Length: 187
Image (cartoon, rainbow, N blue to C red; front, side, top):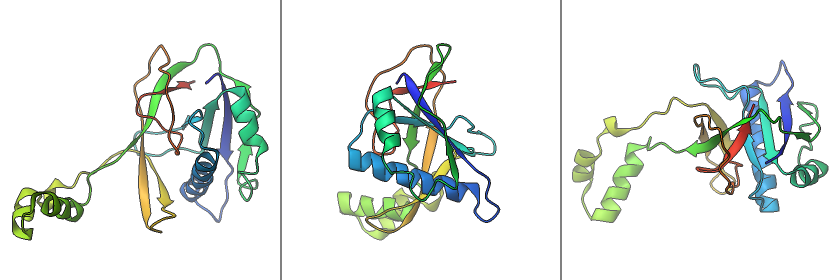
């Protein structure tokens, strides 16, 4: 995690930046899955809390060798007109650290009820009593809109930037470049 690459979305009057970020993020996810990479993390340096927005930059974090290999692959094909990529650069020595993780909400009461019925063998009325519509959890976090390749359903992947820390926490990153415990440099 001593190097990074900034990917800045270029303005396009015909395509909204959240759609471009979704396309870029999808390509990143497919690449991380194909490479089975656990050593590349991400952050969104221009993230906003209110209103929640990921901003126009995606930052890749990793070793110089991992990032150089990734940027030499054709993973940005089709996005070159929409993304400006920096060189592989060293992380500033003044950087702090933070966890950037996925947050999943229990936002669908119907799904929770079906699970209750299946797990506890109860009927629909009992499940409705246990899980009312008001149990739907709403997140006020920035997200990227993605489409599942397996189910073809669209979903929001909510992303939380954790509190700043003075020391790094090592660990592995998932296929989205996110981790519930490992930190990425923040500057």
